[in-house]
Image (cartoon, rainbow, N blue to C red; front, side):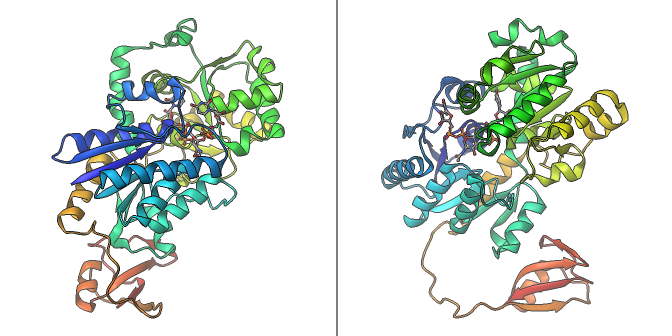
Length: 438
Ligand code: UD1
Ligand code: UDP
């Protein structure tokens, strides 16, 4: 079997590293394709070193540009590689332009697609990420999903539960493994040297890069106004290149940089950054990955957004959505600093993203599909001429697997009272309402 992995931005490298590592331990050929979307050393190369994975086999060097240009160049480059390499499955991760490009190209070449971190939905179609992940899911063969809630999003869109694998998130694998390494090694980045982080209290780690925040001056001004008033905190801000550009263009960079409690530094490598976040009192972010890492590391997070495709973190109590609202940022940050009970509750929120064995479950599932011939994409022989769904109220002890076998049916949705449930094979359906087709 041959697996091709596509990546291209900082979070894709971090979240695919555990899978690349897992594949390399098995008798599987692999090829890694870098789109080149992130190209600065501190946004790309440094992560291959910190995460101890080999340099990619191909780099398409798309660089920066508009969405159309970037996606188009990626499609061209990925297609060329896939035609030569002919993998059995292509893995894409998350919601970047690489996910869209990779899924479109692979599906038209009739190559199976595995979407890692599938099923997340912000329900905000103005976000490029929401469009990317939704379009990719239409073409996906195997869905590797962090939580039951995200799996339910996909069921609601009509995808068969047979192809949905609830694996947890590989960010937990990366986080657990590399925090230990980072602790042994200590801080290395010279931009942290002068700050004596080990002896610093009240650290607030700040990251922001979402287009809907940093490209809108009013939002950036509100956030900076809140930061000005958080002078009891030591704010460490490893700045994303997009944000550096926009702050400079808005003429706000110097104003923020001149605040004595705000330390703007270049993006950190993974080990330094994990160590920094683990020592933080509070994380203020609009990053997706950081919302997940915060709850994994037991650090309270305030998210600079009005919605999140990671609602599990909010429901668990570890994350609060503060948008770009100055009062909400200040009120919640001050409460975390001053109210120990409130802060402890946030810290003790249960991580919903698994135990750190997500890469193993993902590669196990791929090997299983490969061995059963399910990665071969062929046109179906008989296509249903209409869309049918039956409903039933189940009044006997029968599991999902037993029902499906007995009725030769596929269950789509399961309702336990008002709540939708994932149709795990061993779920007892007694007392539940289901939809299915035969
Ligand atoms: C991209 C992803 C976003 C993800 C983020 C992770 C899409 C649509 N967006 O956003 O989902 O959360 O990566 O960080 O795929 N730049 C550099 N050096 C680099 C890379 C970028 O200077 O190495 C600058 C360029 O000016 C570029 C800007 O950052 O125009 C934005 O980069 P881009 O790749 O378009 O999107 P991100 O904001 O990084
Ligand atoms: N990260 C890092 N160094 C930094 C900032 C972030 O290593 O200076 C890591 C962070 O630990 C997380 C990932 O980058 O795993 C998040 O990437 P980003 O916020 O760019 O993208 P998103 O997750 O929002 O797509």
